Image (cartoon, rainbow, N blue to C red; front, side, top):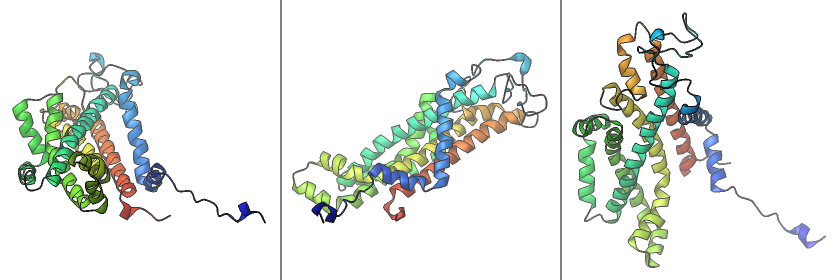
Length: 300
């Protein structure tokens, strides 16, 4: 018998990406939500190419035309038209770019400074932690939407100010979460070894500790994304967010309030779009939590 035949086969281990995908795909609801959200995001990004009409183009002869499946519907307007004769499908597609763009921008604008403040509060506890955390506590005293309304009142309505207002409301959550996760990591052996090896504070913060805090931050960012979409719609519904004629799902709901009984599709379709999008993102967040939390990973 040859020596090679006696050697045990070298075990193979899945890569971190493969392990993550296995944990995420085990959640069937999250996998289905990922497909739905990918379709919504792709349709929104490609709206200039696939939308049948301009979102602000008005067809005065076809005001409040029902969807194609309703009596009086027309194949020219698959989802019908609104009170000004604008194609609802085109406005939903273009509105998705605005709503998703505001959600993504506000998450990044709140996550980056929130992570930095959380790390500073964790590494400089006697000096900076009391000041940073008391400011965050004051901001948390107001609900996110109410705080956004206060900021919009000061800055004025508009797309950019909507992003800033939502980001300010989400900032305390990232700061507190980052500080808690960093404090749990600072006392571990690998951080002590890095400090003994001569690593500076910045290297400890961003190279040693931060990568091990990313799992809860990613899950929180996903859930904040859906909350930002809801807050964007809420501000638009109140007339404090994106201003007409720019299409946005909340603004579409606000403009259709007077036609709920006469033309229910004008309200139902934007509302369903918001519901499906937010539900898909929340289910994706559950899948990310299952895949990134070691305590919830299934033993293969």
